[in-house]
Length: 570
Image (cartoon, rainbow, N blue to C red; front, top):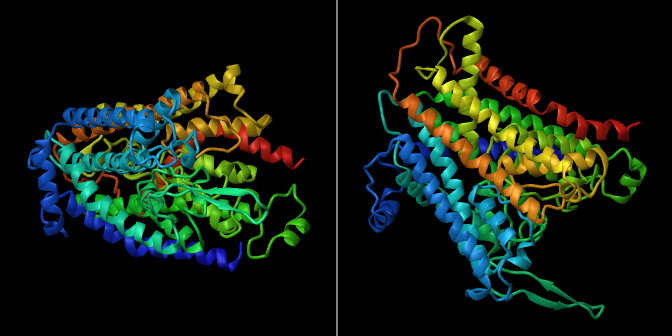
């Protein structure tokens, strides 16, 4: 790694350190139902929405009603998006005259954007109309991101309230998240991206005649606005097939760093929201510390690995054919970014639930690609998606205090709430569901000829491609190894099912835990209470997270990336 690479990494760290605390504290005020900055601007907009929708802004829901509201809203959203795709050939704002999306692909795409996964088995510039991109996919980018945040907020309320039968209102939380958090940040982010050269218009694709006598079609559209919420909401579905490697989405080094910041700012801000709402900021910092350690560890690892180059290619060739500032394994990477910054982008994207990439993960070295896969296997906690990262880490915090309680023979407590059998059963369900979906579907697909037919590379790398696909879908990430063909009826269906399990089947236990803890009385700390706001607990939380992933996924990691690495070095 060069000095320039380290400086770019430092810029991202400093930018997050300066902005995430302020955003997190602002969000705590947004969800406290008290006066918050921007009331004069946002309150009138919210009142119009409440009146039009029949929402009681002061009403609250029990956890079952909250969960039912979430599921029904998501169902309707998915159906509407599916119809947009199927009927887009007959709808306006279709300057390229693209036809309706086939049913299997429309199902996969609707589920994908509904679940904040944004897995794309299509080329956005040639399959989706401007209307579908703007009012279908982009709108769902806002709503799916907001859904993750409100579940995290509901869990926080369950942890900090005492003797409460309610955890807030889904409809109010959703409205405030979109109006006060995602929309303002997206507008500002889109302005910045337009200033860097990202495209933003409603025109049809432009046909350019080349000097050689041929022609080239240059796609267009409302790119900057979708790019911003794609990254900010940890969605990942880009309007172009090349995603954030496309120069119309990500034109230069500054835009690349800015988009990395967009990926990470809300996930890193939410622990401050948690600490502020809990009245103990150090609790949030302990959770944040675990997130930062995991993100920095994986980010630096991938940057170093990819900067070291591919040993199969003689370094003399690499050094002669690429500038020294680029260096390393440049296969599948944009030279305008370089190996290390590209690796940081993809590591941050897989550490969150963002499918955005600025380089092709399939071309990474075996260990580099293995770290990207490991990031997703962590379960969206390094730092995770918008909301899903925080509630995932809080579930692991509950598991950590339970394990610590077993070690010392004390009843585990977290934020003054006793963790008992009812909560631990739900925690176990949460921990097991995603690995069951990821590994179960991958194993089934390996056994079926229709599944194996989509693997374009033999051996260990092919296994990694298959496992990566279902791990990405089940963890609602959405990135893919480019050597895997997911655009089949079988994979459109099974990947969609994995996405639904990874999103809603885990959200319901989280809300159930919130309801269960909210009904409990807060008990004062005693001599046997494990402090959960110390560096020791942050270390325990980090260790438990890594150990759970190791116990669950190490066999498949050994058969995939590790075998590929060692075989290549024989």
